[in-house]
Length: 259
Image 1 (cartoon, one colour):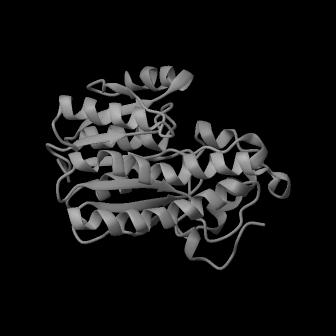
Image 2 (tube, one colour):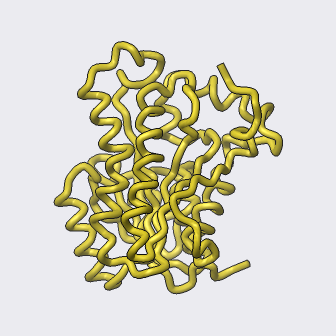
Image 3 (cartoon, helix red, strand yellow):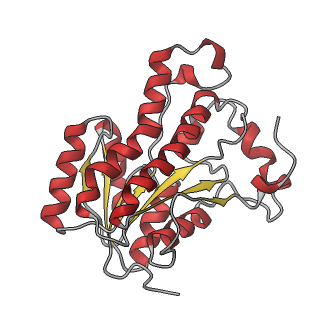
């Protein structure tokens, strides 16, 4: 199947390097006919700009710190000037300070928790709300999730933030549904991204995943997740919103859990 996103305009956040799930989504979206812009901010924006050159055509990279309303407003104006409308958003943004990860759950203070929740959960509402006036019925917002049903080793307050993210997605889906905008999440298995490398103890999650997932799992291959994101951006899910699609080799459905 080709041309699933023909003529669509899509904003992809969270591209750092070619290992990023967001990079896979951006590459596949372009291959399926979409016009793509990326976003980055601060010192990390240079990584995004370098990685953007690996895409053909090279997409524009917009400055976007989702915790700054003025950045969201500026991105909306840039997209309106460039395209006049927006068909899809890929939300692949999450961050928690070091003291909120790695087994320090009971010692983490509120300022670090607040940063994790604002950046990783509230940002979905902020971004979708700030750009929704550019989106027509049939448009799609897709967020990148990690299963928040259980407590994971080392994931700590990011796990709490992801639980908030999942709930936020349902409420955003409710309120944007009247505009015909779909909001769904893709819950991915562990992938060895640059962000994941920064989580102390991440290897205890991804190390046993392939053995417990019925279909197996490669933490080095983000493309299955990218394909799901592109599918949800397309017109092939016209009546699905507020949903979490698991792309994890089936791990979530099994009774075993990593301890």
